[in-house]
Length: 279
Image 1 (cartoon, rainbow, N blue to C red):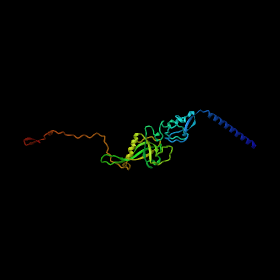
Image 2 (cartoon, rainbow, N blue to C red):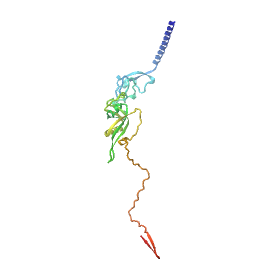
Image 3 (cartoon, one colour):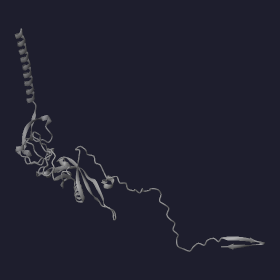
Image 4 (spheres, one colour):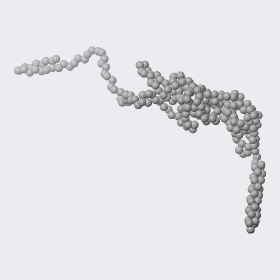
């Protein structure tokens, strides 16, 4: 009886194994029938700004129905091209990840069209304790003396002068894949030409601070800045500006001959007669 049960279990195992083998064979045959194209991918991790060569690339079979737009099938077509973003191993290289043909390698290949790169000196406090990394966005704040009119004291003011500024590099590193904080002495920012002028003036009139912001936050907030008096809650007398009707202008008497006043007369009645006296 025991032998019959064992033989039955062995038979069932063989039956399931045969079914699995048949299914696997059919799946492999179906996969071999899917059309595919050659796509160039990165054979190693490629840092942004790097010049591509054949040793960094390889080709893989990619299903024809899902080939990425802008991808390449020939490694020679990518020779000496420069990547403007970091590319990971096994990732397809596409035209959108590459700088224009003829671009030299380095940080200049990463700068967007119409933008400029400008470096500012920072420390562990100004640089947000090293958390302002390439690819992050920051606001730029300046603390300076606000000029006043003649005879008035200058006011110390802190104000945000630039918002949502892209960090291109910290020190001499532009790799955006590293998330470890780095305390450096210089940070390179991507700015428009107008913002470059603002930043150059701001760092000459006061001290700068970088304010780290959320990557997805695109809102801008217009502020007037804050002075020392406002910070400590000092109240100043504010003279309200009235919009009521203007006060009547004083009458101006023109020079000329004086108008004679009317004479004042008094009639005096005494006894049987009367008399009129004028003043």
